[in-house]
Amino acid sequence: MTLTELKYIIAVARERHFGRAAESCFISQPSLSVAVRKLEEELGVHLFERRSQEISLTPVGEAIVEQAQKVLDEVHRIEELAVQGQDPLCGPLRLGVIFTISPYLTPGLVHRMLDLAPKMPLILTENYTGQLLEQLRAGQIDAAIMALPIHEPGLMLAPLYDEDLVVAVPHNHEWAARTEIHREEVRSANLLLLGKGHCLRDQVLEICPETTHKNNPVSTIQKTVEGSSLLTIHHMVAQGLGITVLPSSSLKETTCDDLVKAIPFSKPTPTRRVIIAWRKSFNRVPAIEIIRKAVAQIPMEGCRMLNLPPVSSANTED
Image (cartoon, rainbow, N blue to C red; front, side, top):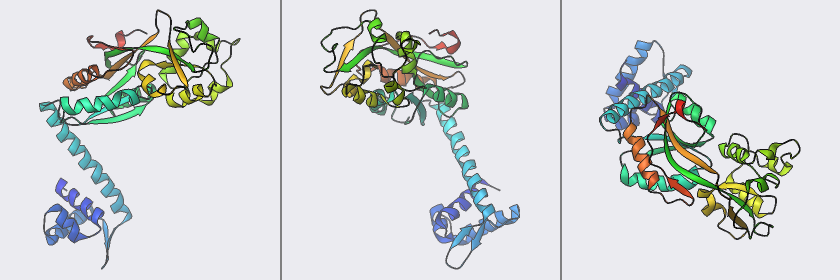
């Protein structure tokens, strides 16, 4: 059994025709037919049912072709790794980004990466912090952009930027004309939050811990937006259903109309630190550095870019 023979049976399965499969493989039809027959004899099973008008897979043939495709995918991955070992900026990089960062960062990031690393396309994944950490651990993604704190061993973390958090209120709210809001005031307001799994929710609750106190229960409105997006929260604020806390980078998208007013917190301003994380065993560190460089070139409101050295996740603090 050879890789070439596996390519042949995949082509026949795809085309459902020996002639077209032979053309796609750039060989003659008799040569293809002989190779497929030879593989069937070696395996001791029929992979295809041959009829006058069409070719179809047998049940065992379907399973073998599926496995053959996986084998070729892994071979392709090995070839990619070899190329990347020679040039870490060559070949795709699988990057995860949390939901509350991705819409505001990735468009500019992709645009800049086209110039900085044209041979390294980004394969983007959006998810919750916990899911991205699992994907990192399993090797399903190469790196992830998230917000601290991160409590996952075996990772390297490099700071990207610090981002201010602000209060968003309806345009006709009693606070709308204010120039700043104290944290203590937010605790007593009808606060709308993202659902569980969003790290921004946890960060807001740390800023305003009394919002979950038994004498100040989370509102029923808040419960209806669990698992939702910042844009959904924005629309609910615009409808006068409560206030919320937003990252500064989202303001251009979420407060672009006149229905929501963004107000800074009084100093010290609460912030979140955005980082990029990767496995310690990941050997394309120059690819991480080029992403850091690209992020540093993106203008984002309320964000202060950082140029700090990477640290082990075991050494990070909240």
